[in-house]
Length: 345
Ligand code: FNR
Image 1 (spheres, rainbow, N blue to C red):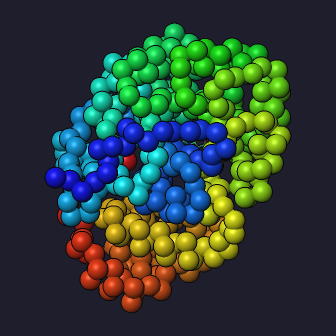
Image 2: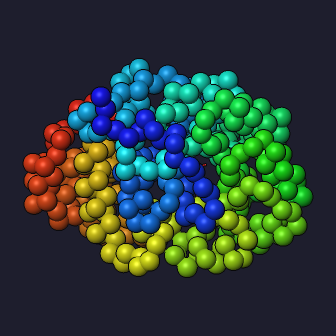
């Protein structure tokens, strides 16, 4: 019998009011970053976006060695990993089809607390496949996907959208989504053509939420970079919860006070969690690079060294935790080497 509590994840009651949420982020939101955020005051950590047909074709494997549940693709790559400490885990799906989305959700349903549908991604890969922000102009498709999932799944279903061109159009869309029975709606306060460097429009969300009332919690997302921005974005927009992406890469302790001031310490802890969960070194390196990048530390010796580093001993050496690495290795259920190959998207 598995020691994992994951079989009862469906019993977790998800509440999306007054929550601090780590946003879905491709390649960033793998298990170690979620765990780092959760131990630093994050309430709910979304997975990276996973495409429905990829998830649908995975096999669930209880990993006794790591005490994780792994979803492995046919090519033996790891598509999704979770564990007991990954509490209130939300898996975000990229989809253009209610049928495939449901098939994918059914594979993971016992091991996640909710499913979120990505309706905001403007990238070519998503949009040309009818996924992400392509859905925003197809209300019938939105209704079909969300209501199919809600009718058939025992866990909450949510979605993440962007602002439409006008507030009235956005209100109409939010109403359509609300009526499907979703448990929460995250609103990235930018429009589809807008890029991360464009400022988020908290004022538009404020206007939307003061002109319409919703029975479902609304989560504000965009430009929350400091701990204080959590309270100010909520006060300004009257949203119910916050969702943070780049601010959490920069400092995974943004969610609660006191916020960590030492980026090195956070990276050291990240490396430890990643090692303990046998995270693929390529993904760990990508995350360390992004943390340094978001902290404008690309001119540092660490940044230069990490570019040529390939494995955990090297990461530990760069961040001065080589002696701890020996301890991790001894205390770990894992060997120094990844024992299954892991996907790199
Ligand atoms: C993202 N974003 C994103 N959104 C989404 O719905 N699914 C995803 O997989 C991703 N992936 C992703 C990767 C990276 C590296 C970034 C920076 C962003 C968008 C993200 O969730 C969020 O909506 C925006 O970044 C705006 O929030 P911030 O960064 O202003 O807090």
